[in-house]
Image 1 (cartoon, rainbow, N blue to C red):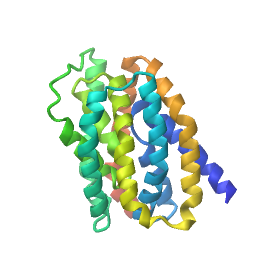
Image 2: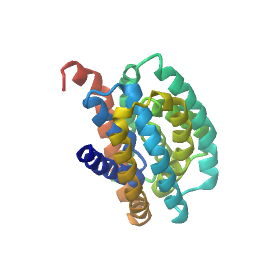
Image 3: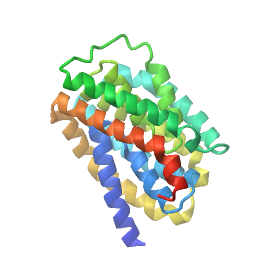
Image 4: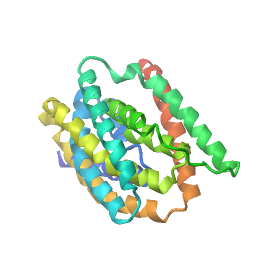
Length: 251
C-alpha cells in the first residue's frame, strides 16, 4: 500500500506543480493515470476531486498571499463554475466524458496556437471587456466534472482575452477551490476504499507543491508563462482530440 502512496505522492506533486504554475493539468494528469490503471472514470473523478479540494485551497491561498489573483475576476468565476460543476457531475452518472473530449480538444489546440502566434509575433494580447467570464466559468466547471477541464478551459481563454498571464493563472486557481469542492460533494458517494492510497498520495504531493507553484507564477516572466500555457494547451488539446482513438487501439 505504501509503495502505491509514494507513487501517487510523486504524481500529485508533479501535477500540482504544473497546475499551480500555469493554471491547468492537475486533474487531467491524475485522471489519465487512474483510468489507465483500469479505474472507472466516475470513481477516479470522485477521488481526484476530493484530493484536489485540499490542494486547490492551498494553491488559491498561496496565490492570494503573493498577489497573483484579481478578487473581482475570482468572484465572477465562482458561481457559474459551481453551477457547471453540479450539472457536469449529474451528467457524469449518465454519459461518458469521452463523448465531448474531441470537441474540447479541438478548441484547446486552436486556442493554444492562437496564444503562441500572438506571443512569438510580438503582438500583445489586448485586454477586452470580459463580458464572457461567466460562460467561460460555466464551461470550465462543466468539463471539470469529467476529470479535469477547469484550468485547461478557463486559463488560456482568459489569457487569449488579454488578461495578464500571472493574474489569469492566480485567479483561476483561486476560484478552483469552490468549483472543486462542489463537484467533490456531488461525487463523494462514488469513492471506493480501494482508491484511498491514490487519494492520500495525490493530496500529500499536491499540498507540498502548491506554494512552490505559486512562487513560480510570481517570478517567472509573463512571456515565458504565456508560452508555457500555449504549449501545454496544445498538448492537452491533441490528447483530448485523439484519446478515444488511442483507447480503441489499447494505448
